[in-house]
Amino acid sequence: MTVSGYNRCRNLEPLDFDFSYAYQPIVDFRNQKIFAHEALVRGINGESAAFVLAKVNDDNRYRFDQTCRAKAVEGAAKLGIREFLSINFLPNAVYEPGACIRSTFEAAQRYNFPKERIIFEVVEGENIADRPHLLNIFAEYRRFGFKTAIDDFGAGYAGLNLLAEFQPDIVKIDMDLVRDIHNSKPKQAIVEGVVHMCHKLDIKVLAEGIETKAERDFLVASEVNYFQGYLFCKPAFEAVGKIDPAAFL
Image (cartoon, rainbow, N blue to C red; front, side, top):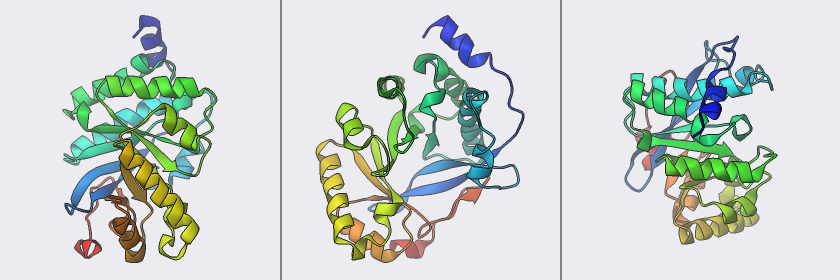
């Protein structure tokens, strides 16, 4: 970590808007318990993520990304979350991984949240201008003890090429592939291939956007064990969501 990189990540203008978080559980289906909570950005009155992200631009992107990390950790600590915490990050907003991650360390220490319980996930659909930079970010995060995840896998620019270069701890299958998968042979073939590949690479597979038991049952039969979606729990604004026990039946 260079001093100049650290200062560059710290010496940024404050945001001229505020935001908060909702938290959505990710379940370990086999053990019928919560595995993690994803921090989902929201407006201070519960407005959508799109409402907040519309305020992000090239001038404030870096400060927003840094503030996101601290706020997500602070909120999780205040809510008493003890499972993993999954935080989205903007790779194009990271100057230098070792320097820019310092704010996350400081937040984890300040709120007594174990850094080993933090997962950083990047949306595969984000058009990464500098893929070697993203790979360096992932490698640095792993070196510092954080978990990593690729979100919306199968929907974006990177796909298999990214996975060939870096194997994250978790791959999250895009909800468009999950939707009505029990009725779609092409989706079934694609997802089963991803699951087989990830198991060979020792990567956990998480299916997001689960809304029906039919979707869940097909994926369980396909050896997917981690789930996120309305079937189990909707995001809870500034609260810990409660899992519906019937979702495991």
